[in-house]
Every structure is written in structure tokens, then in C-alpha cells.
Image 1 (cartoon, rainbow, N blue to C red):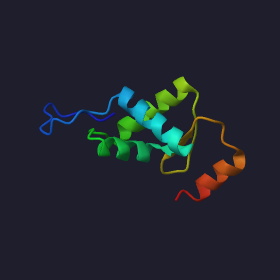
Image 2: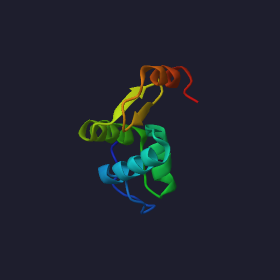
Image 3: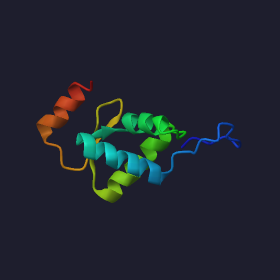
Image 4: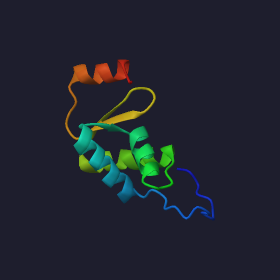
Length: 97
């Protein structure tokens, strides 16, 4: 994970496991799936300091704890609360955008 600077001049909060979980859960409920990139960008939009490495680390732990499914398309992970069908996983890997 990233080492955080000793001083936070912007006074923005760092994204915690709890903030990452709440953000990911909301995105999953809205869209049925989400990515670490979407979570990071949403957290930043909310005013958090969020690093991709931290979001990826916590999303990995949260997914294991919550039983979320995910696949990696080579660039980022795509998470879902339900099992993704093999045809969908293949489509997401081949067509990430």
C-alpha cells in the first residue's frame, strides 16, 4: 500500500476500508458490478484521498469477507455480488470498455 505523507495539507480524509466498502456497495447496488477504478474515482469525487493500490488492497479483502465475485481483465478487477456467468466474464475481459 502507499505510504501516506506525514502531513495532509488539503485536510481531505484518506479512504478507509469502511469508506471503500460503503462506496463499492453503493456502486454494486446501482450497477450490479463495479471496478476498483470506479471505486477510486467515486471516492475522490466524494472528497477522499484515494490511491489505486489502497483501493485494490481493501477491495480484495472486502470481496473475500463479503463473498463478492471478481475477475481481472488485465487492467483492473470487476466485482459483483453474484456469481458471474462464464460468458459474461469472457465478454468483460475481451471488451473492458
